[in-house]
Length: 363
Ligand SMILES: NC(=O)c1ccc[n+]([C@@H]2O[C@H](COP(=O)([O-])OP(=O)(O)OC[C@H]3O[C@@H](n4cnc5c(N)ncnc54)[C@H](O)[C@@H]3O)[C@@H](O)[C@H]2O)c1
Ligand SMILES: O=C(O)C(=O)C[C@@H](O)[C@H](O)[C@H](O)COP(=O)(O)O
Ligand SMILES: [Zn+2]
Image (cartoon, rainbow, N blue to C red; front, top):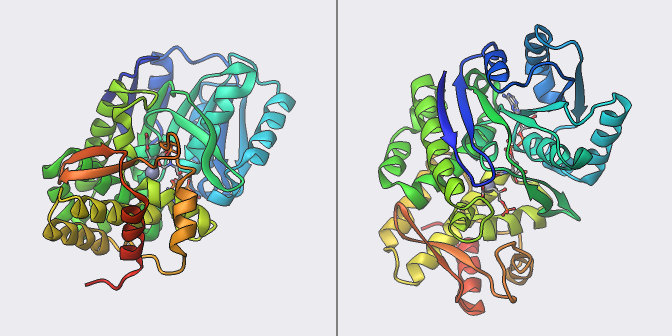
């Protein structure tokens, strides 16, 4: 199996790439994770496609395989679902030696990881991402948690999986809208870290929508490499890791205010346009680059404007961003395609001008 190593300060773990679930047993054996109770956490949709596939493979080596299934969707990413997980763990006598599998998208990975991080003060977990977004971003790096009072990821932890196991073939059943949502994070990786990668993604639209296996594998592995390199340098977001939040300052505010009507990647897409506009206003990038970024996002059917919210409510919501210090909103901007800068001294008027831009017509 191909693999990429993630080396944050607290641990070191591989991301394995495969075309099925069969090889997961080899990985579990290699990591000395046999002989214990295991529990798959998944949502109803993913369960209907892959729940039994993973269960059947695990049953070859484990006597006790449990499955906890919740209703799919961001609106269920909250503490009540986590409580239900704890109850299920206790009812089935999961202990410190037990192992959790997060089978699904980012919602599943974030919640299963948080439950694993906190149950009995921490039990091991494996990420088995099945959306493009989870395969390129959320399964790597150990940010786990839930939304609270609808504010994004307000309660959580940094807790790394023992390994990540990507079964690339699961993308065959993923709805196109979800594929686009994942591409938003891929475009983010290119914009902040790698101009060649950005150009490659820019020119691969048709192949991505055709689910070309070679292209998707290349994209997933490159995004994992880029994300791994950042979280390996700054696991707990003390500085550098903030660049992975490009587009999220505005994006999370929009996601919350729209009550999760838009997908995470769709909100990040709008947020990246806002941040690119600020980069243009600060003379960091040209108008042409701003337009090029908008065009790529549009080519992947991602939204680049938001009309239905008031500037003031977006601004107020951004004040709850996790990068805020002493009431100062910190933005990740671009100094070119492939290079990000963290900027903490933008004034309210300038920030609000980016919101006005997002409410303007596309030129
Ligand atoms: N921890 C991190 O570093 C990080 C990074 C990025 C995003 N996130 C979080 O991830 C979440 C978004 O993740 P997501 O987009 O994967 O959402 P998701 O987990 O809700 O999955 C999207 C939808 O696709 C369905 N699905 C999943 N895999 C499928 C498959 N193979 N075939 C068919 N349907 C499938 C799910 O049932 C769900 O309805 C957000 O909560 C976001 O905040 C976390
Ligand atoms: O891994 C990171 O760091 C990221 O910021 C990746 C983001 O794509 C992701 O959406 C993350 O969950 C955002 O974290 P938050 O700390 O802003 O809630
Ligand atoms: Zn994100």
